[in-house]
Length: 256
Image 1 (tube, rainbow, N blue to C red):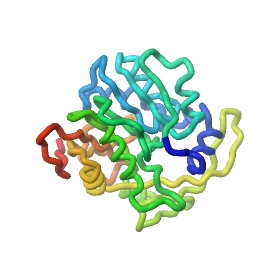
Image 2: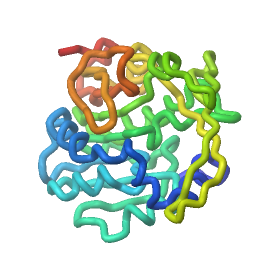
Image 3: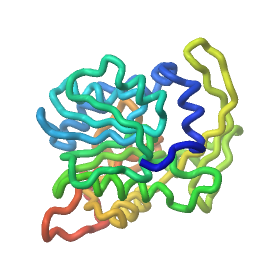
Image 4: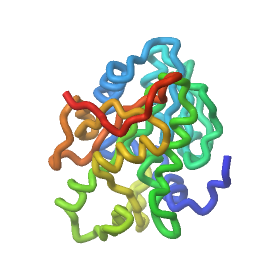
């Protein structure tokens, strides 16, 4: 694990704590997990990696279905919250998603709601830093293992740019000045840097990471479905797999 100190997200997570789960985008866990179980072909006894697990809402819901889940997050506070009273089969580790310590250990991997993928940009970060996260996810999968990774839509972000946003067209990173509140309601100012993507960029990054692209869907938190990419939803969901022996990596993802 690399040293997580200095990553802009960690003090933000420390302040939020379990108040993170009050945000509206965290309320769609049941829909998201049901979709992922079907889309990734998950079954009891399989082993899943949740990258950027936050307080563990997806990992815990999957574990309740009999799936073994390892959740990792850069925030020590979030890892502690996720591990508290966790169901059997769910374990949580503090790790940097840019340097995942796994090699061909999982049947599937997820990274949702910008828990890790999409947060590697920001001050001092190299261009396309999120490629490191995707490469680590690919490496963690067994041959044939499948991944589902959500990403902010660059189309949607620019279309609905707000006064508190500044969009870096070269890096594809949106900088938002806002405030976050802890469980007591205490607010602190916050700077958020979120990398945004087009479907084509996701396909190219996946191929560079050694993944075969199965699909890119247009999704909204809490409303995951097989919908072709559009400019009307805030996120895309990349679905891909690690190639089996002899399988060629391709950037072409199918639609419905």
